[in-house]
Length: 234
Image 1 (cartoon, rainbow, N blue to C red):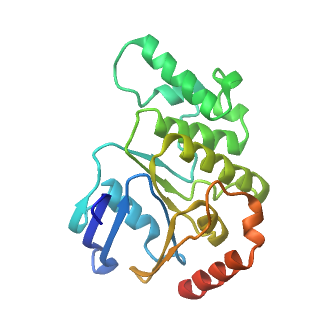
Image 2: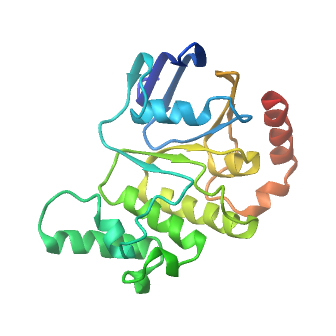
């Protein structure tokens, strides 16, 4: 696609004699929200790590130089305050500018009054918001998210999904999101890619308009899509 911000052609990853990803090709447009789903061992996290440059891979890979990454295991420093965590990835510059960036992101994650708190003093959902703010603060072009809500309870997870959509609408970042939750993938995404046995087994364009609310999860089209993706995963 002409406006692709991320472009991958024939990407493969092997560990010793085991091939984990096999000749994967995909494009992601600027500002697009794409989710990767698949059974355990299908290569979702491996693909994300290859895109982020964390592991070697063969093939053609074009990714912007400035990326942010959010992991499932809360990607914050427990010995730093919320404000210090957000400021950590900022480049050297005027302290006033950094303070303004931190204030903006505290407001974005709705934790304006908790800048001096430590992660242990926050809920799981709040900690993940801090991790996402820290990834956003340096103004990356792309955000990679590896099951960021996997450790949260269902209620908190659903609140965080809606919050992430609000942030995404405001910041217009390109996001690649790994999840094992089909409902989550459909609700958040423009496209859902199904990985199986190290390959992209299916691609689903999500037809729902934005903004979205929880009611779409009970629609016949949502349930049909969920069943179709489930079948391709299995």
